[in-house]
Length: 512
Image: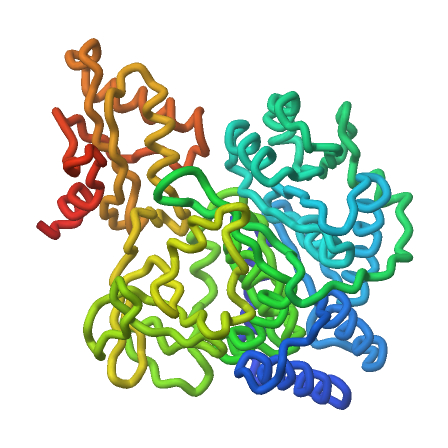
């Protein structure tokens, strides 16, 4: 491991492990006021404000506080990579740079409030600047993992009707290959050192952009983010989050779960393509004035991560090993049956959130343009999460597993339908069912049960398995390929011909 990595980890540990809490003067007052205010909203003691924008109402307030204090415990943002490069921004610098980015989106890219932009970037500082810039302009931010293929990008561009896409040199060719089919796309912005034909260059535009920008006034329930789910049936669906749902909703987890303060550093290892990156690399730490730490690892390195002892529990709460803990305000979480009836303590059922008579403001608004999917998640007064579990008499929730077929492999959520669709394009596959299979290193992996076409029955199974795995890597994102393949004569089905994945999954997990 490089000398640089060895140098910054002890520094990070010293700060993280420090018992000092630097609350002085205005710092202490503002921290107390901002968290107490948002706590009151989360606990339903105050009404949600009519207008809210995380950039102006939180980040700019921390910036103003820095000017008053003229000193900070930590930077707002701290980024490093394996090559020894390092970036540190104060809240004031974050504000200055994000205003420049906001002007680039509005003027160079021609985007307006309410327009949608897809951002597919690895863990680079520009991702955070663009995130904040979208808040400032009222542009809806849609993130994507860098492992998306041309087919994935095309689907997201067509479905979201995004007017702009922002990516790097690695994915630019994939974007260019689908441009003719993207009638809504108006501009392309690249994050790269050199120019590329047909693309606006962020670095070049930054050199000319003005930092004079006034943040738009957004309503609390205006859309801020769209995330693409990994559905168990059909292709990924769009989920809308409002300005308040994340901007205010994560005050509780930042303060009570992560126990963050302005003298703390938060390191979240999630890929920028997942909503977890927004939760723990943007909103929860910055609402508490904490430093967001980022290490740009192209590939996961356990030897780096393992050097920090990481854990999180709600402040002052008794820990019950194996439990996911207690519900966090403003959520009323219950275990319900398939009709929405609350089940007795200890009985397994659907982990659900009460949404009637009042829907928690920090929940996603809806499945965009998909009212059927939105309605299908309701059971009486509850929204069912898709997870199964139980609740003890003390109110602790115990997770059992997914009610649907989503596969969670090394933190990547994979919808079986996408893998099945890729495999069905290969001439060797007549029928296929994809389920999760236990794995000691990844928790679970993708396994494909395949009925071969007659012409391929006599092929060498080992060679054919490798061929199919490589094929899936090319057709869809590489992390989705089936690490296990089993050739079968037929698949279990219902009377109407629907494949029963549950039967195969139970077999894999020894539940039969």
